[in-house]
Length: 162
Ligand SMILES: [Zn+2]
Image (cartoon, rainbow, N blue to C red; front, side):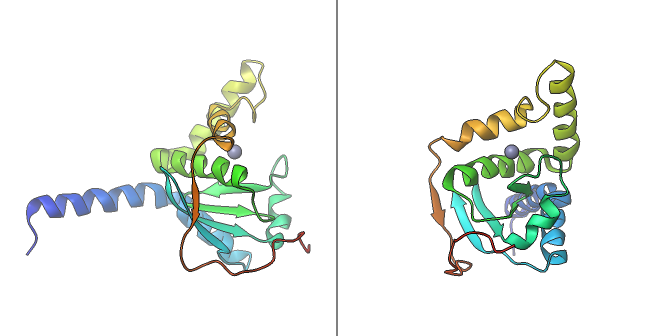
């Protein structure tokens, strides 16, 4: 039988998970499923936690349809990428994972609003977006990245095939 304090802790944990999952993780997982690809690596990023990397050239077609044709995009705890990511890019995307965890369903509207504000102030809507400024700053930061169990396919990280 669980004590009320235990139940409260579990409720808080579930609420936090749902906050990030709706809609970040759900969007990311749906995209992965629709593209017919799977998680290729799972890493633990210091101070942030588990990040699922989906590094697959088949995602290029989808990423090419996004403005600026990004190398990678993050949805909740899922990073979709057209190619294997460097540690610097993993730290960049992990910062977005942290932002998704904090903002939950507000992440996408906050991201778009921050781009509009950056643009209206004469800045670049991408590089001037504070969420991107933080992510670029994280690239050369100290966060350690460790392989997490289960998903290292041992696949060659050569050039994309598509
Ligand atoms: Zn970014």
